Image (cartoon, rainbow, N blue to C red; front, side, top):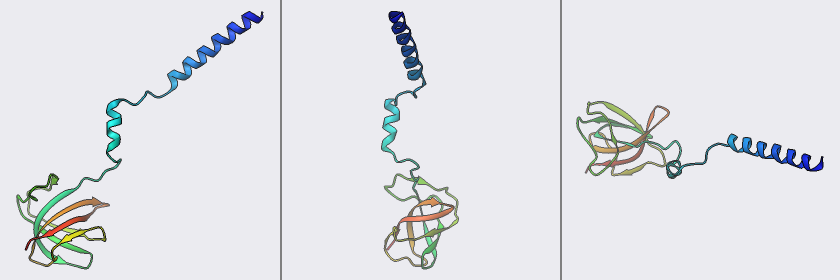
Length: 125
């Protein structure tokens, strides 16, 4: 009986181990591992160029020009329609030049809770 008990326990243990192994999630594949380099929820940057129409303390308004693009940038471009866009400026915004009404500007921005947050602004000379 002792020998029979050992065989029974071995069969039951093996069955439990097999079922437990099947219940585990599949191992990560190489393609899933390559996606770990990109941050989760990464922000899509966009660029637009136009003429500054108004400037406030922490924001400015830009009238976009049809068919404009920031040279040398590989970012998503906004549509080619003329439109007015408002951008929020914060302590993380890089501004190259002086923001003033009537100046041409290239803006790289991100959308955050429905607001256009300026990441970088280059004002034409």
